[in-house]
Length: 271
Image (cartoon, rainbow, N blue to C red; front, side, top):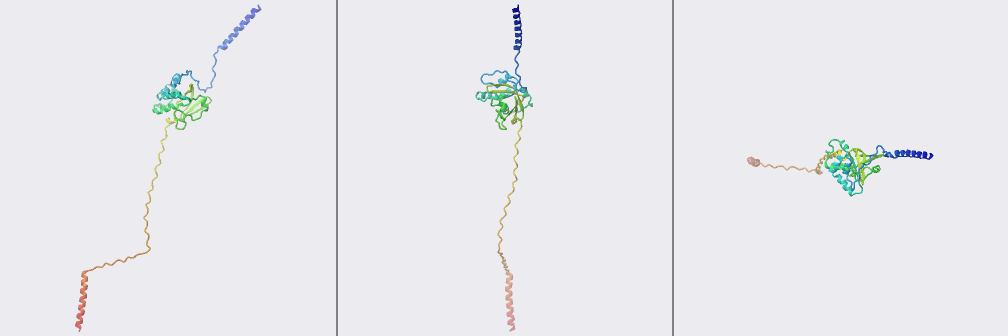
């Protein structure tokens, strides 16, 4: 009788133990909590075999129709894929959503020519693989595929605040809102704004007009050299002009003859 009661007690305790175990191990494991401002983790996109194709990655993620179209029409997607095959440095793409493009002023994209659209897509691409942790120690300005780090060469500034990554173009301040893909030297991050470069969307000031030439002063005329004054005064006596009057000469001659004749006549009459 005592043994039977002991077996029943043990059986009851076993049932209680099994019940407690089923409640404990049957609950799903809770995911660790993340900070409120932490970017979303990568989507469950299978890692592609071979060289990753950025447009296929964006298509699987969804919500990037405009970006995919621009990457294809500008051939930047092909450029990324080709360089991934021949480079170990990798690429980082900041991917604006369709909602980010819809926030642009109407006609913004249509106002760009083909060259500017290529620059815009390259401006969203860094020619190096950056994990979210790498952005905490990055040196600004950051080079983009559109140019270099010098002013006027399409650089970006990337800063972090805790686990939040911020991007500044000098015209737009954007935030990384999630990781779409990060593997095989390619990182694709969702951003909440289209990155507008200053070099395209801010009109350049016209060059300053050349200063007007200074008026040319007329050259002073050279004065004629003064002749040295002579210290000797020369007086020129005018030569008298001899006027010969044939009538007066004849009268003179005849007058002399008359006078001589009268004198002879008076002398003879006195004798």
